[in-house]
View 1: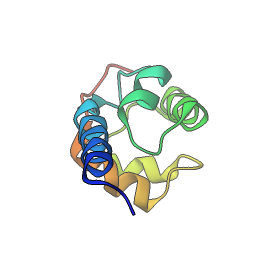
View 2 (view 1 turned 180 degrees about the vertical axis):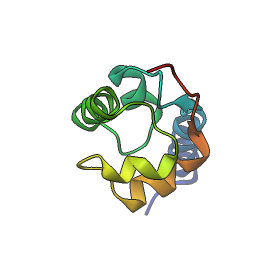
View 3 (view 1 turned 30 degrees about the vertical axis):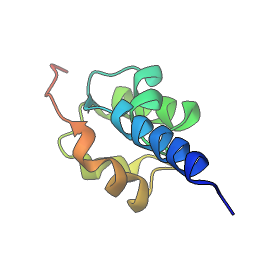
Amino acid sequence: MLSVRTWLAAASLFASSLAAAGPVDINTANAEMLAQELEGIGPARARAIVAYREANGSFTSADQLLEVQGVGPRVLDVNRDNIRLKPTDR
């Protein structure tokens, strides 16, 4: 059984990891930033997002992330509040 101290430490780490994720513009962020700021997006998925954007132009909706291989509905839903869309010239 976890002690209260262990539980509090784990809860604190979890809360700080949530606070670390912040809004990220999927039209301007590089792969490193995407992987750092979006939950469930590691380096490979982040590179796939950037490659998709470079091949298809700016995202006009967060839902377009579902067209990127490896990004599914759960990943999108978890990150929806942190996704920003700034149109870019292309």
